[in-house]
Amino acid sequence: MNNAIARTSALLSTCAFLLTGCGGGTNTVTNSPTNSPNSTPNNTATDTPATTGTLSGAIPIGIAVAQTSNVALLGQEQVAGAKLAQKYFNSKGGVNGTPIKLVFQDTSGDEAGAINAFQTLINRDKVVGIVGPTLSQQAFSADPIGERAKVPIIGPSNTAKNIPEIGDYIARVSAPVSIVAPNSVKAALKQNPQLKKVAVFYAQNDAFSKSETEIFQQTVKDQGLELITVQKFQTSDTDFQSQATNAINLKPDLVIISGLAADGGNLVRQLRELGYKGLIVGGNGLNTSNLLPVCKAFCDGVLIAQAYSPEHPGEVNAAFRKAYTEEYKKEPPQFSAQAFAAVQVYVEALQSLDKKSKVNKLQLPEIRTELNKQILQGTYNTPLGEIGFTPTGEVIQKDFYVAQIKMEKDGSKGKFTFLK
Image (cartoon, helix red, strand yellow):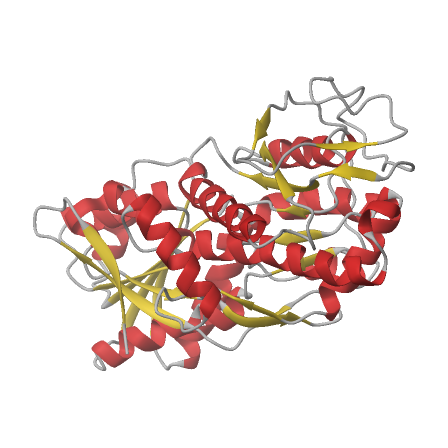
């Protein structure tokens, strides 16, 4: 990762609520007068790193994802995956006999929420590293805080261009959109080789959607298709009649949507209600079963590229899939698998580090620095398959998929069916 770090120019103060994870015991940092679980941070709008103290008890790992706002449809799946990882790895002895404890902070759906969550986890909760945030838009604002404090950050779903380049302590387990997104357009062409005209929709207020639509639009051109219109919207929008009507009047054969689950699902529904009958490709923000209650029967047939398949072979994925289906009565989604994988990376990197130098003997800043180095050196057999990292923190992953949503006629139930 290079050292060109994005700067946050304004001091933001937003009330942050500490949400506790399941199990794992307690954690404290010695020699620190403000580490009480019930203490109020002196100034959550600063990002001064902890400079003293060693760990005692469970090892704290921060989970900063969206549990409220319209982004919660994605963040809730990440919470589920992270909690399953905590239970799974603690049942296997945690970090060489020491359990991990996940410390949850709600980033909500905006940059201020992510910034506040990161500051609280770093300065008050004294975590060794952070999984988060949910959105790339949030990462560009919050990740520099982790970089300045020299705290490892692993993005579970940040696929926009230049995320790892934010700094030396920033990595991600979510493959970049430039690798994943084109697969769904190619799948659409395979289903209908006669496709010619393409309409593109994207959320202009979301960094990931803006990055993803650039890839989609370039893929359209690379495949020799005609891009007939580009329609913009906001992730907070619920009425898309104007944009949908404008596109339908141009008679597209394919519609591509880059947005989030709530707005994307409503857009799918309104396109169908207005008479559009062609194929629809959804971007990564629509890659959640929480989309299905939004567009219901109208979700049927939507194509979405995947970085995870429940059917991927491997011991860890089999255990993850079994635990998820037993808990939630449905197949695990990509966002849960990626959150599980991010926690797994921390656990296995901590295990390797602990074998070299006992983690509970190191000062917290040293743990964070050495952990960051270990993360980038490791190879991990996760639910996503085998992954590793480049020296800049970019994930190395080889297995990708495309799924198509299949709904029951009444829209009551649906599932992601993986294409061969």
